[in-house]
Length: 447
Image (tube, rainbow, N blue to C red):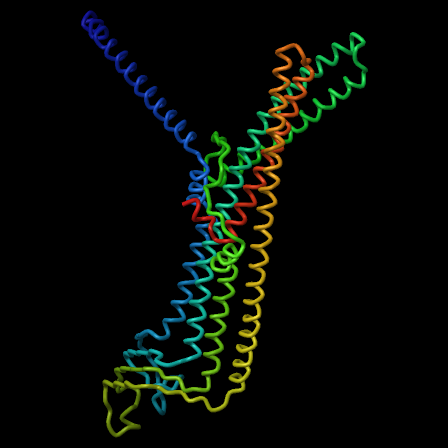
């Protein structure tokens, strides 16, 4: 009996080991696939991909869409007065005398009421004003979308600039340390003044301070970009310097026309003006009669003493027709019309002022973009000059006609010019983004 058990165990162990090996291999394969997919995802985090993720995961954009839905429902609520409305109910009233409910109607066992406004200019004006204002909430979706694009693109580009700058500063640190060591050796040999050592130490301290600043900025931007893209805390992010998608060169007049055509602020002001026009039109028409289609069906009962007050009793009663209300005098009417007119006049002035503001804003941003482009070109040529100077010094050093200190100093200068160029290039990209936002082209280039 014991030998059979031992043999059975001996036969089972290879199977258990094989199963463990298979499970381990499957886990390793799954982990490898997941890591490969993760690496591929990180490699694919381009500027356009980052913007797409930010738009997909933006809570601000989701809230703007919900607010637009609320505004649409508000407009539908105002429109419901012009649609059929059907009500039913019953009442139980004790009558001692003339049979009537407290509201003056006959008490009924069953009641069915139909109402529908046919002509009511004031209500119609309020409904159309709500529809115009709902369009403003739709424009808020576009505004929020552009804000998300601008913020995520700026964060991505700045993070790429900061990380590139850190690489350059570490190279500066290496060159600075070589210069400092060389200066200390010469100072120890009496070939340099002690002040040169202090000057080298100051240069190293400045470089270290700049590195600490950029490392802090790198942490902040990385965390900010994770939040905007909807990534988990601590998720690695790989970015690279990129140029903005190419946009066609436009003249100042063309940019101004684009801004006037696509300005969200101007469209909102114009929608509000349209709403005020509808309200003013409705307010002026308060003097006209209102028409309402009504119908009522009642099932009455004999218990309300109808036979004591009327010669004939009819259990089923139907009333159908139009109710016309003709205003004769109401102090509120003139005041309402005057208020609506003054509000419309104020809105007309606001539209004109906003149109002028848009023109000035696009001109200023176009001018700023040109200035930043010019500053970037200056930084590029400054960098090119530093690179060519470094190449000449390297050639002299190889020929024994330049010292190590001169070579490393030129490398230090070239790194500083690189950092300055990155700052100028990022400022230029920021200017382009804000100009594209003003002219309504920001979403188009990231499609």
